[in-house]
Structures are given as C-alpha cells and as structure tokens.
Length: 294
Image (tube, rainbow, N blue to C red):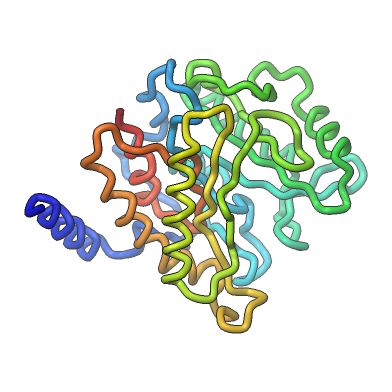
C-alpha cells in the first residue's frame, strides 16, 4: 500500500511539473525533439497480433478547419504520423468520382486520395510502421458506393490490408490497414466502445472514458479491432454549449495521461486497443505507446 501511495505521489508531482501543454497541444508549429522515436512499432515483435497492441489515434483526424465547434486537431496529417499516431478517423463525402474529407458539413481541404498518398509516403520512409484507417461515409452514401470508390483508389496495392482476418504485426509492416464498420466493409471488423461524444460535465466524461477503456481491455486480443473515442464536445447541448472539442481535450487529455500511467507497474501492461484523441500532445502519445510492454 505504501509503495502504491508513493507511486501516485510521484506521478502527481510529474504531472504538475510538466504542465498540460505536453498532453494537450493546439499549436500548429510542430517540432519534435531530436531523440524522438518516430518508428516506434519497430520495437513490437512480428508475432504480436494487431488487436493486442495499444495504438494512439486521432478522432476526426483531418478536422483542422471550420472554427472552434468543428476543429479537433492542430497537427497536419504528416505531423500526426511523425508524432506517433497510428490510427486515422476519416469522414468522406462523394462528389463526382472524388471522395472529399469532411467533418460535419465542413470540407477539410483534402481528398481521400491525398490522405492515402500522405500515409503511403510516410510508410515508404518508415517501413516498420502500420497505419489503421477508419472510413465513415455520409448518410446519403449507398454501402456499395463507398466500398467501390475506396477500392478503386487502392486498386491492387499490396501494401493495403483489406482482409477481415486479424493479422500480426509482421504481416502489416509498411501497410495501410482498413477497419470495417457499418457501410464500410473493407478490412478488419471494428468494435467501438460507447462513443458518447456529447459532453456537459467533464467529470462525467472521465467516468465514461474509464468504462469504455475497461470494455476495450476486455475486447483486446480477439478477431476485432477495438477503439475508444476520448474526444467530446458540448456543442448541441444546453449545459455544455461552451465545451468545444478543444476545451474538452484541454481538460481530459492531462487526466487521461495520469489515468493510463497508473497501469505502468502492471506486468504485462494492459491493452486498450485504439485510443482516439483530440489535440493530443506528444507526451500523451508516448504514454499510450508505452503501454505496449509485455
């Protein structure tokens, strides 16, 4: 008991000394420390199945434009990947033959083709890595439409995983891994925990995250990928009308960092699957990565 108390005291001191900026980051001038380990997945053994790996991700990964009610990220896609993000959450809308990336009704100044090209360039440079992608379509889409258009974008690219089977790390190095849910049926089946994104009280949101992460922990290691959205917004509610995604992340991200670090003494450390965040700072990303100790 004394040892656990001492650990929590040390953890609290570390949290206070560091400040919140390293866990929550809304700055666009991105600079990595010289010693930063970009290809962190190189340290994961080939035999580890993907559903047993805890992965830092971003919610509405391209949500960079549209004002405070819509903006969910500060870092460009390239910078997110270099910071260690390995899951991307994309919403698309079709116009003609092109899939445009959107958030709500706001165009995010990119097409799905451009996103895939950026990810491919990253994976070409860092061949030990894999990037998981969830594609969600607008309600007006027919299921076959989004599948066919994504399939036409990837063609016969051998560095894209579209099978429903759960691979191990060695099978997906250097590859884009699609996750299937709802209308999008390419890739590994995805389980999303409750995903209650509407926030009227931060403490209530914290408790929801704990429940969701417990659910994710139980689901890890199976035939499905599992993901938890840490993000949230009060937009559209009365009591949370001023809680933009940025304000929620500013409070939740430092708390999440502290919550996850309590599992560090565990051997092995637990798996939580994909943790999708808004405005994650590099130290929070590293905290998620460092849960991968077996």
